Length: 378
Image 1 (tube, rainbow, N blue to C red):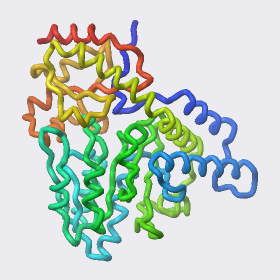
Image 2 (cartoon, one colour):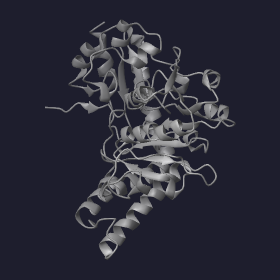
Image 3 (cartoon, rainbow, N blue to C red):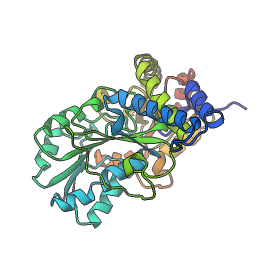
């Protein structure tokens, strides 16, 4: 029985072979506790963690002491948002700006901030899938504490105007947080902007294991971002994320970050080739592409075919390819995508959309066979 080709890399990526080797090395051989300061095992573990901080930080021009390891972007988002609550209350900065297309790992912490008395402005998008930087600027107030905008949308693959927003914030005190889970190590320029104070990343989106990520908290001059921990019980990660550090996972993330940076152009070229082949095969079916494709990541296509229901389409193709119709984190929900509805789609239009996402490791795909299967449903 043939195995379908995996085309759901926005949900999670395969582990790069050299990253797997690093992981196994620190699981089986260099298994010391980074906090053990009395012997060589602990010393080597600490060296591995510090090297990983350098590797992750180098991707976006951050310093070693600005990299905090977490379990992934969801935890990083929570720490970046909820961790500013004390500062906001202390300084009467009770306003936050975000967009209507953020991941639930941003939207739900913001709902908690509202329960604590903060006001949240959610800026909409149009059919392009992008927020207008001028609307962010218009929403700014003297009491704005935080602006949280994702780098690239996980469902549509559409990049947000991060550089333009950073420029609009240059003279404002608000902290700028960016959920960069989908773009870290893939689109380098935007998230290297030093005006981005807080940057969330997830290892399993860049060919590292699940269960590891980071929050990059850049200093402004000599001032740290005034975060308050959400959990307690140790002094690890500058007291912001206590607990024994998972050295194998951290070393693997560091390795993945370094390889992503050094092979960026090669990977991008491969992804563009796959995209071109897919769109060429689908052209005769006249698909409707979601969002402004000028800003789409090269490894993602969100589209629909003449209102064929996405669930029916996925079932029809399941022996050929493994794809999705939305965020993996909300896959238990059968309600239409909040992202697609925010872009102005009807529920029927949203329910027709599928997401196909690949990577440089994806094997050759017979897109013509897939197009022929879809044609039978039209």
